[in-house]
Length: 619
Image (cartoon, rainbow, N blue to C red; front, top):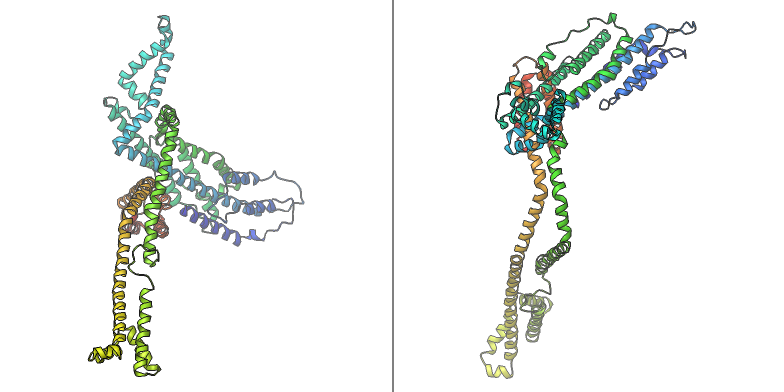
């Protein structure tokens, strides 16, 4: 709890500063029989450096017992100044008081968590007919047992059993008859079956009204328990232990111990079922004005009593009050499930064992079908698609061989170059230009020779280059055809990719639907828990908002409201553990602002408004 940690750290710094400035720091330990070394050792062993982990109450109790002053000695060799002993005792008692104060705050905060959860439980049960019906089933055996025990005890007390036996009637028959009569006795039935209801409900006839009235009464009294503890918490925080004034720190210590003892006594003895928080903590308690009549030994005994008696008594008192009006025990809530499992579990198990072979075959068939589907309908189509993208030689669609176009193009290039060299005797750069033109589809030298030869076709067919130019043009036509076929081949390959995707899409869709269904089965419970948690956070924030809204604009919160505010903030800190990491730090920072009393009610209202705006997505 950040508030408790900060307060313990602040008090520790104060007492360390007091010890550093006190003349106790210059004490010597020359005398082995003196109590000064012993007290200094106890102070050193009582380490308060880690404010998050306070020493246990057992350790404090042992320290306080070890600090008991020895019997006065008449040995003249002991040179111990009483003032030195007293100063060390005061410092030791201050450290023990800080631990007791921090422990009490931590316990009060921890005790609010189960109460808050129980209040949320009653809210859910009252808001749902299904939960109400389940609550009736869960608590029926306990009501029957309580009523039956009351009937039996009354029969034994009034001697009805002896009279029945004297008349020849068995105890079971008499008890059955008496139990039926108790069911018809409205006052007795209400008294023992619904013990938490007020007496004003004796005239209520409806069982549903009695049930809902009982749940509301439990919730109301549980709220009363929480308000009383919150009032004590608010009093401890508002009128907290403070050792800031070095001149009067002993007086402040006595005052703080008075406050802690007063709060513990009130919380340990008050019947929180019948009184309100204002009656337990009506106002600021009376304080001791001076420690003149208070000795360190008196404070030691009082702190020892707190550790050994008051704190354990307060804890057990809080547990008893919470269990009396909180949600039913785990046995009460889960006995229907346990009974159903015990009755039908063996039969279901026998059915499964008798059909084990069929079940094994079904599992194997499902496994084989799943593997075949994955391999034949998902992996193989995907491998073909990858092969198409990479222009695999094993592709199923091809109109021409891979190297056909390149070979014909190189042949055409050589034919044109040889033709030009034989006819025109060109140099090297000119031949390179011809090669470049041929690669681009330009065979102009051959066409010009063909145009000249066509003027005398017969002569040039025998004596000229007409036949050679015709053959080159035929090769050119072949190359052009292969270029066209290559384009068609690429088009077919692109269509093969489309066909592959079309073929694998249904399989991928089936895989997606199945994966979503399986993940939904596992995530539905977590989503339900998350939704429930979001509702709890919103309800807790609403409670904080209501506390601040009902407070006066410029006044500080009363003890009860201050304690309730701190309890709600503590509950929000527990919920914050499940928030995303990217917003948790900001959320906790805003909670620290809500805890700070120095901000005032007005700024605390602005803080809660900011939280509603900024964290609406996660609420």
